[in-house]
Length: 351
Image (cartoon, rainbow, N blue to C red; front, side, top):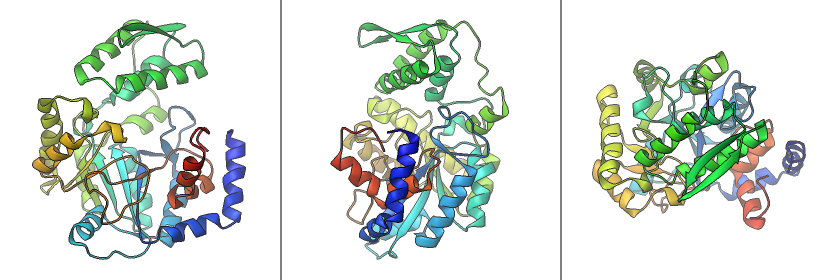
């Protein structure tokens, strides 16, 4: 479905009051939103696909404040644990990764609308100039490639990818990153190095204002300042590794050391965790058990849906907000309409 058709489709549902009806259906459930980045700039639609514009974020926060009671995640988890009632239409705002634009762009908007939030930090990246997530490093290699083909050893088979044009690079990056997510950190690093060796250029990841706004990470002074103004902080691991593929020793380092770093810097407990990638395949009972042992009180997934006191607190559901020029698309996602459509048409590309 093209962007124009999507916009018209979701706009028509909005005028039909479908979103209002769907929102009422979930008034007793808790809505938790996931954001990653909020950008003033951001003309590159592919690179910024997991970010929203400042203008759109402001509109979303204004609407959320009007129609929901937006609470800190800690209040929601405490209410779930103690079986205490929450207001109808309760919501929470969260961010994954810890990008600096959360401070420079999103934070002033949240302050203006008096909206609390939780930011999950990839702790090895915080305060490290030029640091980047491995997923974005892969994007950089592929999108800066000046060759027509790249080869990747995938499950014992040498697979060739066309990278001769923009669309081919998008498709190659998506497929390669999906494969790399199944590997442990050492194997993944070797594959990324093999990709680098095929591309005859250096990688200056933060070489323009748009890239800096998109990819720079927070520093600890910024984290501390936000922590004094309705922003809670949790762990998103040390290195953004998908924990289901880690050995017990690797998992322990990712969970315990990231938690300890946040507590050391903020001098307050780190209570919550967010699973990198966050699908049902990306964490297991083993991982949930170790999260409890590490002292985390809840963990958030990227499984689409709403929450009640009966939801597993170590698999809380969220709704991921991605780049879109359509405010109606945002409403479709947060009211549950988008999820209902997906259930009815599982083989239809995302609306």
